[in-house]
Amino acid sequence: MDLNADLGESFGRWTLGDDERLVAHITSANLACGFHAGDFRVMEVTVALCADAGIAVGAQPGYPDLLGFGRRPMAYDRDEVESLVRYQIGALEAFCRAHGVEMQHVKPHGALYNRAASDPMLAAAIASATAKFSGDLALYGLASSEPMANAAADAGLRFVPEAFADRRYLADGSLQPRAEAGSLLTEASAAAAQAVSIAVDGRVIAADGSVVALAAESICCHGDTPGAVQIALSVRKALEDAGIAVAAPGAL
Image (cartoon, rainbow, N blue to C red; front, side, top):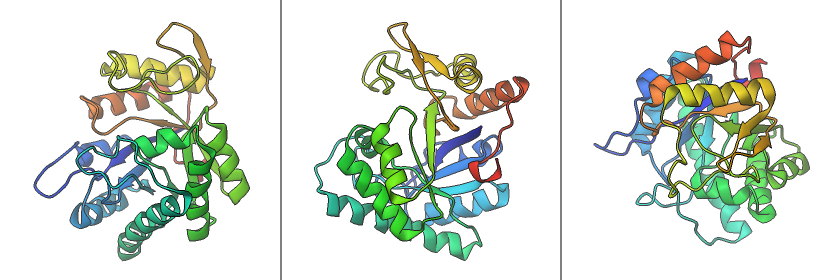
């Protein structure tokens, strides 16, 4: 099982997350590319940090919405989505090359991620932009998302179905909206228990108490969740204690 987190989300003098401590507990990092978060210096420093930690690096393209952190839906057509995704992958690739890092994957961010999970057009645009950049890149998406899985397959990409340790689910397998109470799991023990349930049993308990089947190859701990470092540490320890090998997809 891969354990990933979103990194490089600081901007200028504003710091978000504790990336330097978080990299010790994860196996893959999704780096903001300057549209929803991050900037040119943050991107370079974060690539170097991941290189030193020996973890897999991926691009996390999002909507151009710094004020909303990429979590607000925006209206773009397919060609525009392809261009904005391609632009961001290319920007991160420049820093990866400078530091001798081979980019491993692409994972859309925020509203782009959530909308693509149910929108075949958006999913196809993201997959196409990724595949035209490099067919060797894996594409991360919500484990319950047929549009993302199908788009990746159509583009000839490896699809990495992803689940979340620190987010509550709805009965249909989608994530409970952040605006709703209880949507975030901020207790490390609760996040660890959910991660083990996903990895061992292939299921989570939804907000309404129903059981949701999830077949995931990667588990995410958000870098901006309160207590993110302790959550990631606890999740990894719980997975390993359960006999789950924790490694990036390319190493499994």
